[in-house]
Image 1 (cartoon, one colour):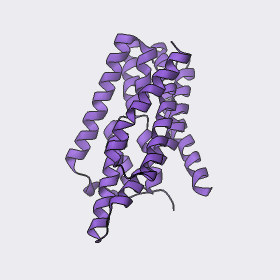
Image 2 (cartoon, chains in turn green, brown):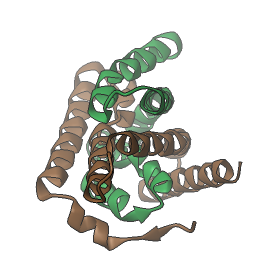
Image 3 (cartoon, chains in turn green, orange):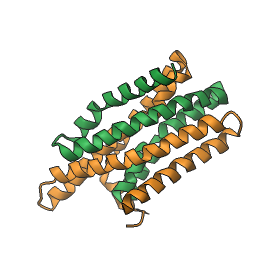
Length: 100
Length: 139
């Protein structure tokens, strides 16, 4: 599933549209499929509720990557890996406030 | 510009680059499953929206754009960075679709057929992301 979306992102043009596939639900489809089969639908639905928070954090993460890449001379690998800290703090922060 | 498929782009990506994304995506799927098993679905679910393949994709976009410009005798460093920033902008728009995907699964999965819900949620992700991309393109 992950490879399918990654391949699709390579062949889709223009590049701005291909970028949408960077936030494709590839991991979610694979994980939810497994969770439904092994733990049931209610368990997977609970995972999805938390996933919505992870997706909000992903939005802040990718927006920050965009701004930093556009305004600084830092490389994509450095920026996208270092800013993962923002995804962790954002998702765990919102999770702590709303779902814990 | 209309959305289309360019299969010649497949030749520019090395097998090792696909392997990295496959392994990283597989590892994140496994970690999400293990975390859900250990800490429960409420915490483990966060990792279903972990930026699993985005860092590798943005790095590849930057590298390919840089190589393309350097082949044409230009300095591709800045252009590569701009292309990666454009990729990140697309991912941010895709995230709005990803939020809708998660909400559809959360609300519909307990009552509807699982396969139908996953198909509907994927359609919601693509639909919302495409609409946002279209609006952003026109503004």
